[in-house]
Image (cartoon, rainbow, N blue to C red):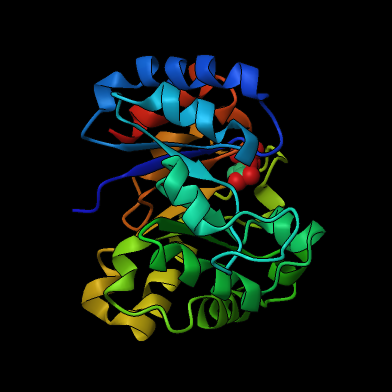
Length: 252
Ligand code: PEP
């Protein structure tokens, strides 16, 4: 049995001064899920100290939204996995489509970042997914396989214990359009089969694959009921405890 994982991706929303209140509200509103569902808030880097302090003693874990692959050095503006670990972060989102679209993230840099996250003992949430153009051109399978073969290169079956994959069709992120449960399950099954070729079938069965893209209270249960959908990566609905908590409840 794979434990479900519901992670909020706050993106560039929520100021440091607003962070403790949101983390505490999430912890309170999801307390029935403690021990049953992994509940994670991935916050902007500047919010991390407040988020970690507010989550202390609760079941909520804190994640970051990106990390650099170097241990330290002359990389102005970047944050290393050692810094994140030291700050109390447990998860790091890597390769979100917004980073690929606006910040030149490639499958190669995703791979470097993911390996650094895992080497630091943190869990990498590696995002993959096709654009609408790619889907309509019949390239879905090709895109997913390329993103995984390159993005997860040299991640061993042991490393896979620290890996979560988020399938996020780009056309469904922040658009209100959700993949149907059957559409999502079909891609999740493809992801698991591709993963089996990379880390072995037995290990692939243990890796959690989240769905992300306009997941909300009204569609979460149907999506999460699918065999290979092990959780959600939530954008807009993660910004308020009362829209996030019902998704966590649906995962129970
Ligand atoms: C995301 O950005 O990871 C996401 C899934 O956003 P939303 O839930 O707003 O579509």
